[in-house]
Image (cartoon, rainbow, N blue to C red; front, side, top):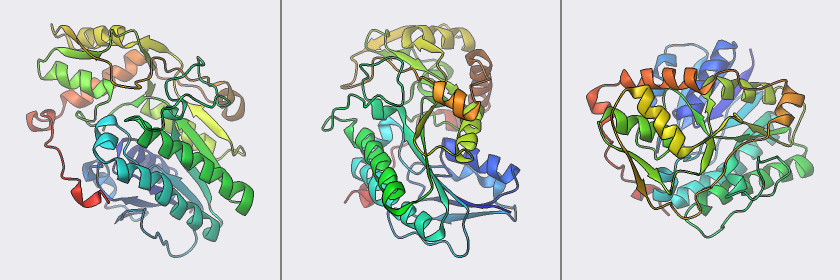
Length: 327
């Protein structure tokens, strides 16, 4: 039985990864400090003998007794609302947290997969974005705390690979969606669906001409799983290249939900990317991977999930007090 440590497990992608590795017969050690995660996402796994959860902040020393085969590092605030509210913690988990896990991987001789993001490309000047593109990032802008945390994370990971010989994998994740997303996390899909379900008009920032490419969670997890088990140590884009404007997507949501909401427009946030579309040529060639779930099917599943939530869960959560994490 392979032993795998997964961080950020109470979050959206992390919880689905736990499901996959448990299903694969692995012993999963799950870790999260619950700043942004929700234990409801993994509570169905608590009774399993091959699953254990640790409430721990990985910016502190991380120790796992015994052997360890794989580490998947998915701990990080990942939505604008989160990383703008806790910028210091976002930078620390990308730097100190990554450093701790790479050190653990070195000691345990474990393979480590680092979750990077399409945000390393910033507001791209190259379209679609290939792994060779260096990006266009404002280091001191409001999004810089997340973008630069992930860029540093990649650099530190490759330094451990070249200097210490640590066996590494790096996935650059593009917009991913599906069940277990948070309604109030600031990302476009839960924001639109939440507004529709509450009978509010849909808020589009800018003129709506900016584009995004959405990948369903099952496809994302499959791509990550294949990358972990590949022999390639450089970054690989995992995302869906099917591109759509935000305005057109808002209209799709109105049609999907059967509501009569209007679209209202607000100013575009600073450094918000105008284009986002992955080149997945590497993933196709190296992993024999490409997304299978089209947006209509994936959005129906996602909408059904949100529609199943209680009225209380549909209301925006009260902002958490993050003061203890800001140092």
